[in-house]
Each structure stands twice: as structure tokens, then as C-alpha cells.
Length: 452
Image (cartoon, rainbow, N blue to C red; front, side, top):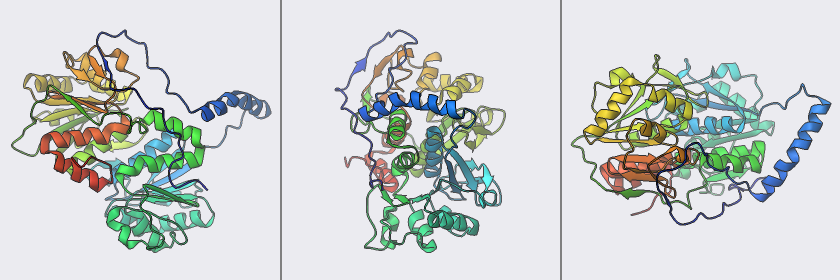
């Protein structure tokens, strides 16, 4: 049995905050992230094992691990998309299945996600893992879906992996009787509904084939626990590094230079343009966290269609096309990452005009992960300090602050990568509304955030 918390080896501490001054040589690329010693030893042995296997039967590649993530109206979109996105990155064959009459669902914070299949198409399939996202009323709608109940009960009876997060352990698993003789956790709002002698408050609890977790703020840990159980600790460690979820204790949460007040006489209007190839986990986290603070967020597609397919093949439906969205003035425009998506954003003439006007009028703008490169191409980083994904910092000609998840420079905000998006979003909330509201949003997501 795996331990209740992740068994990933702790990363070595990073040096004190460093600033990389311009200019920097182009196209040098960041060094690969180091693996733990045990993982490196395993990796060295893999080529000879693969060669031996190929000699025996080169026509039979190992079967992909099959994962089911059901979604419903009111599902917590961060939890669903992080589960699907992380497990697909790890190599799993993930099916997003709608329990509704149609494939498109409107999630708990208003994001529209298109499932791969209806749940009925999964009734007779065998899955290595069934993972239930939370959210209300999404958890109730999952609970009341008989096909999903049969799939999950069979999963438990046949000793295959299953799990639930947030409200789902209490709202879904308990009525189905799948919590019995298991240690279990859930969102603090529902912890009182769990059997007292079985309830725990750990972020991730593994109990036999069952894994449970607490909320959107623990969704990465939840997903990575499944990566470890399905693929082993070395793959989980690699994923942890590439997602940048292991940097929490080593980086400054946020650094601000050239501070100005971000003020608004209305609830802030924020535009998030999206394209095919945009990183869907970043999109959904940005939308979800900001809407929890009552920010007016508009998702705008730069494609001919209102829907886009993200970097991990998750389809998201935008609120508007970029041309219609351009009729409104925005307090902040944020570019999500995903290299292919960022390049498609760069080609949008309408978005270029919006960003140019944003800078000229002194309104706020920013980017996360790989998108600061696009801001640079459009002349929006001159005399600015930023952070960005390590793989692209050598392409930036401005000052790069390496040791902070988020950097705010006047009216510009930048973030380092996937694992820092919640901090990025909370930094925006703090600038517009103050620390108290950011702390309240963090608490609701079960995300660790300083008291002051």
C-alpha cells in the first residue's frame, strides 16, 4: 500500500533569489530538471530492457492505462481538468465522460467543457482508474447517475483504483457504500458528514484502492498520487518537476517592483484570450480562481470557432470570439501558456491591437508560462522585470527574476508555470481587492496561503 502522502523525494533547496539581467543569448534552452538518484538508476536500465522486449515482440507496445473522469453540470472544473491534464501528460488514456444528455457541461464556476463521450459509452469498459471530481451540484448529479455507480462499484469490487475529491467522497462515495473500512478525507465543508473514526484531514489519503483528497487547492497532489500508483514514483517525480508543483517551499510567492495601485470603480473586467494548443489547466485555473472573487472574466477564442482544443486535447468553449470581446475595455488581459497556443495568440491582429491599447492607456496586462515570449515580441516587456517558465527565459531580453512564482512590475504581471497559476491568480485578487479576499478564496479551495 502506498503511503497517504506523496512519496516523492524532496528537491534540493534553491539558492537565494536571483535576478537575471539582460541581454541573454537566444535559443540556449534551460538545463533538464534533475531526477532523484533512484530514478536516474532506473532510467539507465530502461534502454537494455526495452531492447530486449523489442527483440521478443516489437509489435506489442504496452497497453496504456485507462482512466475515467466523469463530469456533470456543476462539476468543479479545476479538479476535473487537472485530473485529466496531469494523467494525460503522464501517458494515460483518459476519457472525460458526461453524465448529462449532451457532451457539453457548464461547470461550477461557469466554464464550459466538452466531454469525449457520454457515460453510457463507458458502461462496459474496464478502467485502471475511476476518479471523481467534486463541486456542487456536480457531485449530486454524479451520485444520481446509475451507470456511473455501477462502473465505480465494479471498480471497487474488482480491486482496481478509484478515487474522489472535494465534495465527492461524502456526497458520492458514502451513499454508494464505497467508503467502508477506508480512511477517507474530503473538503472541510463536508468533513462532518464522514464517519468520525475514519475521517482524516490529510491533503491526500490513500487507503487500499481508494484515494481521496480535499479540494481544488490539493488537486495536483491528488492527480500526482494517481500518477505514482499507475506509473511509479519516478514518473511521478518527473511530472512533479515538469508541472512545477514541487517549487512551493523554494520560491518567493510573489515579488513586486515599481508598485502602483490597481484600482477600479467596478468589479474588474478580465480578458483571457485562448487558442488551439493553449494550456487548458492554466485557462481553467485562472477562470475558476478569479470568478471565485467575483471578477468578471471573459474567455475569448481567437479561432474561427468559439471552442478550442487545448494542449492536452481537452475542448473548452469560449464565452465570445475575440472580435466581439474587443468591444469592451478590460482592466486586465492575461495570456495563458502552451507554446502552440501562445503562437496562435500572437497571430491575432485583434488581440495585438487590444494589448497595444492596454499598454498605451496604462491598464494591466500579463502572461504566464511561455506567453511572456509573446508579450516580448509585441514590445510589451521593454524596461520590465518578469518571471517565466525556465524553458523560455533565455529567449527574454528583459530582466528575469528567477526565484519568484509571480512578478508584478507596475501594470505587468507574469507567472512561472502550471504549478504557480493559483498563486498568480491570488496575486491578481490581492492587487484588486486586498489580502483578505485573496485569503478567503484560498481557504475555500483548501490552498495554503499566508495569514497576512
